[in-house]
Picture 1 (cartoon, rainbow, N blue to C red):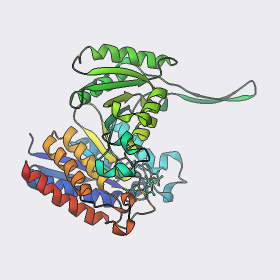
Picture 2: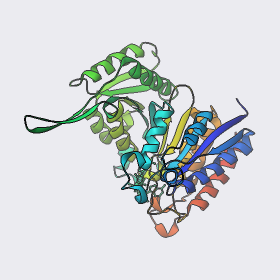
Picture 3: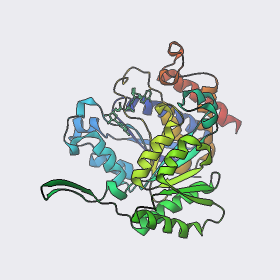
Picture 4: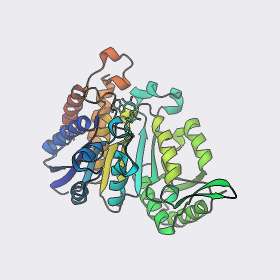
Length: 364
Ligand code: NAD
């Protein structure tokens, strides 16, 4: 294992700086207990970069990110920039950095922790024990195809092209098999092969790649069936892999099985171990600056960062265990509290996790 890593830190807007500061405290505890040094390089992205640099993704930020072993991002956006033209919107910074870093896979784990079962809108017996991962293709498909708007015979027409090539499909399928190998060795490839040609290519490539992974059981499911099965019997899934638009929808659906948006982590990966890690939620401008943001999704994103980009599996497990242990003790931020008068703020929640992390790391 390497002894030092460079981590790019992009706090962004709204609650971004608060939750990222909290995450750095978690990383510092990991560093102190493992002896591995983390060097942080800070950059601006989103609304704060529009204000300071006149662009949502300054060159300097992209350079810092490219030179790092991993990137930790808070969140971007807010009402201040909502009326800006497309290229000057905070989200353009996000799309730009994903593209600029070649991040073609988005991973969203959905793990139901027993003490949060009541936070889900589904029945406890349906969601208890859910532990799945959605892998979404991030840089191809209909979101990136040619778009057209024209009038034909006096009628307005809109066109969005859906293109995938074999290589784009193969790399995401391979990555998903590798992920499944480290989990329960079950991969469900989701498509719409009964209707779409691109899905028939997807399925063919998945079948071919599966031959290299005889230890992983692969199944296929149509996207409509998958959307249904996710709310009917989510425990049947281990890893789900799918194309960009289907993944956009299914990953939100799967994530919400587990309840609160303040708990959801995400990783965007490219070739090799490099990745960008962020919580799923946005910049929560309604609570920014109040010290009440839930930092746990960002901590769980740090765990993904440690595991996927730095190969620090034990430290990753310890961060996750620390989060679950703090929840088991009944500590809650306001967004996940049943009794809000008992809720703790960002700083207190962070202190609890950092303290628990010390126990976890010194036990191992
Ligand atoms: P949001 O996810 O920011 O907030 C939705 C609700 O959840 C709010 O009531 C908020 O207070 C709450 N919430 C979210 N995260 C929380 C946390 N960690 N702790 C406690 N409560 C939390 O979504 P929104 O309000 O629709 O969007 C706000 C801004 O964020 C918009 O400008 C949007 O474009 C942007 N956004 C950014 C990202 C990103 O950076 N990846 C993702 C989604 C939305």
